[in-house]
Image 1 (cartoon, rainbow, N blue to C red):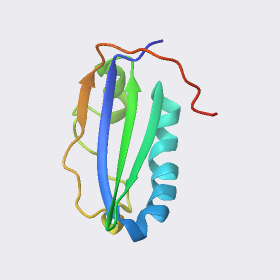
Image 2 (cartoon, rainbow, N blue to C red):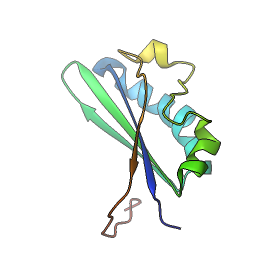
Image 3 (cartoon, rainbow, N blue to C red):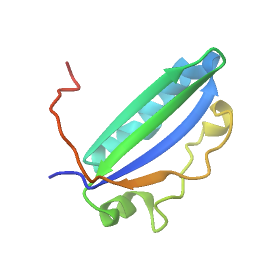
Length: 109
């Protein structure tokens, strides 16, 4: 099944907390998405003082995404420890319709 929708979340931590947050985000945020989304990716960009994390989950439809995210799919379901780690609490997510996709890669390599 090919994804039609990408749901993008962004959050920033202090760089000193980035490794701990990465482990927490994976366990509490990514693992549940692995069970429901078609695919999920976690990105990280380290800066001198802050680190940005970006999560992109892929869905076959808005309806499928809403089954996971609820009736308001742009609403963020903050993780329990997000206030401890995040510099600012994100207020929403970006939802994009995928209009073109090409290429092949194996993320496990």
